[in-house]
Length: 101
Length: 424
Image (cartoon, rainbow over all chains, first blue to last red; front, side, top):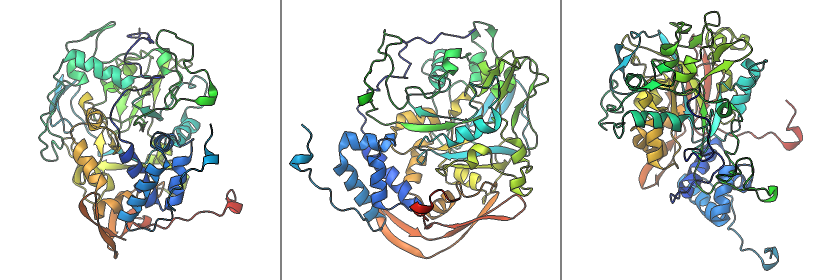
């Protein structure tokens, strides 16, 4: 007989709940993904495209939480540190007509 | 109970049988920094071994989102909780890494075998501390893992987020954990089987269930701390990952007679996996084999760590921990070697960068590698440390000495033109 039936009140049950934590590791996450894909041969603009892709949940979470400029800066710094050419142009400030009310 | 030596714990422990080790042991390393949770491995396994009637719920290989998910649901949280109840506050390590016999220091707590001696389950005494997951926990792997859209507490069955237009997402770190049977050196499933239906092959250490002997008592399901044996209702027996043994034996026609990696390893698009057979000493430790990529990653570079070593089964699956995950979580999952492993992986040396290039390059197993030194590409400071990149060439050899891989650290990326995207 099973030990316990699944209980929606069980505090150990993490499916379908938000995890509360103050630990912000978004920066390290961006560095890691950037270095991994850079070593695979991706250029900077292709890597930035991954962070814009809503179907790539980890990177897109960082973009939504921190904004694209945050991601852009880390990708540029990482490429510079690894002595690689970064083909990203500086992020543009959103124009007034781009802002949805 | 016998006394056996568990090098992952750095000490002797109790186990129901005497120690017996294969000539070579099935082992693998997964680089979690690269896993994107695409489930190609899962589907490769499913379409090869578990597509038949009665196997619908079976995923011998699965990828779960940590810390949210698990298959079966919250398997590791429950096991850790049972161990903590058995030994409150005592599941600790001494934190003094030693030699190859105790690379992570010594575990001071109790393993699943030791905890079972003082634990009586609802069904009576156990040989390994464990529990039997419910049917519900086996159902719907990955549900609500990437999108927390489950029920609010106290409102079971009612979705908390009913609008599909605004799918909620996690706000903080997570990572993908790919899992399969660890073909443990001290398998809890084998220890628990009252029919002696589970055995470990002397030639490669793969753990199998003898379908003729199994009577479906599910003691193995209860005992395996990783929950990697599953019950099949149509045959009334337990089944588990068979380590793609025909491929490991070199009987897959594609391998040309030499051992191949399993289907899940070969199918990995992210190049996160490397599987092989490592040589064993008579005492169960790994025989020194300096040019074997798995020996290098586990015992020399020490970037790859066992999953929940404190369970005590000496699993043969090793993981390069994800760099961005808070260390206390990783220490609980991979033991005290985590800090050094993350540090080394984040600041890779020349050899490590070359060996990492072997991942996913060929479906045949690599038994030995060599590095031919190449020119220095640049020198810089990364994260405050001096870093030099060399464009070395790494060459991998199969079981019979055949060259199976030759690639460089600065490997060129070839992208198929869009007009030929599907022209293979």
